[in-house]
Length: 280
Ligand code: IPD
Image 1 (cartoon, helix red, strand yellow):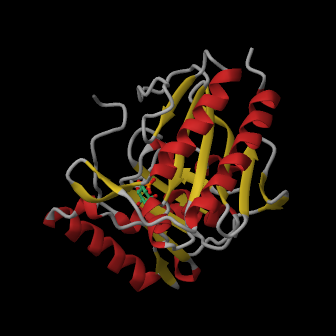
Image 2 (cartoon, helix red, strand yellow):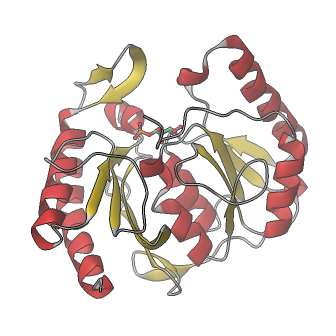
């Protein structure tokens, strides 16, 4: 059987270490590489260092678990299939572009899944001293204080978050993104973009934003945040309605099911489907 207490204790300790490293690196952080031929997909030495620290540290205690990390380092299996096996899904730095630019919306995201369900989650933003934690059925917390989603049921009274991705620059996809943004802007109090999908989910969990949707995030961007939102009383679904699929590169989070439905209705058939994370 999986010892969830032990898993949680180890991830907590390791995330604290990683947070220290991230904070220290942030003062000198301007160097980056780009991934593949996407000039806007950035990675730094700190992303790789933190991923190694987390995965190696966890592997010492849980050698049989499955590890999925954004940067594919740490000597771990990097296969992206989600099975019933205990699985750690890790983004060493979510919001790397913000990190590189010194914009402090960025975090370490670690989600632990079992039987294809999120069990444990930590999103830690050491830049602004916010650590979000959740265990399934035990509530969501920021720095040890319980948090709740806003309870907002009306899109007209909501702050909505969305990430616009340069990877979507093909004109038709851009038009869909912009069309969706316009529709949200016409209805909601405001539309914001933070640059970190994981932080967006934390903002919905703490009630500072009411909804968030994105057609693009990878499993490591959402694996922790979705549990935070649910444990804070919010909902996470697919942007076209129906169940959220962590490998599906699509997410919609809302403070209430009513708000979620209104967002789904507004998006309508203006949907984007990227290649799934579990496709070869
Ligand atoms: C990205 C950020 C961005 C979101 C993308 C993510 P990364 O993560 O969260 O805001 O729009 O979907 O991939 O690459 O900085 O870890």
